[in-house]
Image (cartoon, rainbow, N blue to C red; front, side, top):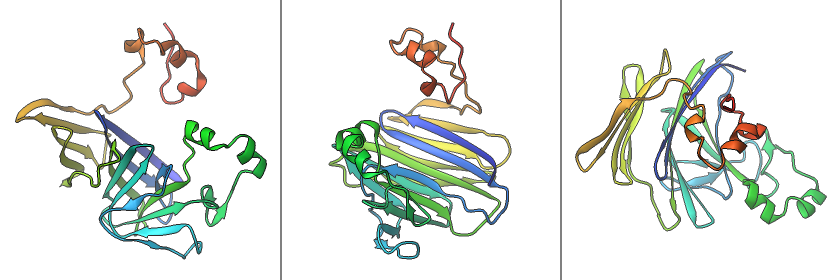
Length: 245
């Protein structure tokens, strides 16, 4: 049971995403899991990926490192876990495990796979057969999760180095990629806050606080051809409440 949750989602063009989550459990012993669903099986590129038979004899693995790589359709996604400091990173999935919860797979019926859930349909809507799970090793009432994701071409074997930044009441990441030197800091306690600094060729191109609340009401995108769909399609309005003008 969750008592409190906030997520700060930072996109740095063209292919970097930084995700910072703060989670407060109603009871300290309640487990907290961070999930990354993928189309293909992730590999661990900075440590072994070994079988884990504690829940199920097949389809479960434990990563010894903290950087995962998963390729699909000519692209690759890297995921670097910076926080929790002490984390167990698991990988599970494959046939018979793609919808598994606590060792039981809640699969679709055979006719659905043949008539609806075809490979083309799975590709179109992004049904992933695998997922990565990140869990703190010790129970606590409050935990933070910090991940840096990088999407790029699948001929890229390794992720750029990422340094964790720790300050009093703050945590963040520092790295150089896509022609930028990046430092992003988040508040680990108190009000949601943070800041970002981007430098290119020794010149600061951005140095500002991060938003502490949702600011975009989509009105700035009024000229976009997709604007009417954003305003009227209920499936596109779940994150931000908007009113058509």
